Amino acid sequence: MDIETLRSFCLSLPGTTEGMKWGEHLCFMIHEKLFVITSLDDGQITFKCDPEDFNELIAQDGIMQAAHFAKSQWVTLQNFDVLPDKVLKERIMTSRALVISKLPKKVQAAIAELE
Image (cartoon, rainbow, N blue to C red):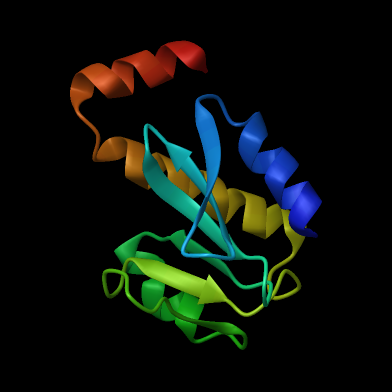
């Protein structure tokens, strides 16, 4: 996967918006809440994960706990090649679902109508 494929995939998910934050970081959001961040500078990708999957993920080469995010809930991949495309897409969809689950029920219902 590359940055353009990641961007196309994330924007294909209903209700997703994008924006630049912290200088060189392209962020993908649902209802203004981050679910994927990628650094245009070094190609790292950060996303939310299920806390039950956290230890398994960071045990893999090229994956670490995300700096400045909730411990055991966000991971950073050193580059796009750390996970196969299919697995990365599944992880992104999980990240999005985890973020949506924390939104108010009314907002969740509105997002569900888009899908």
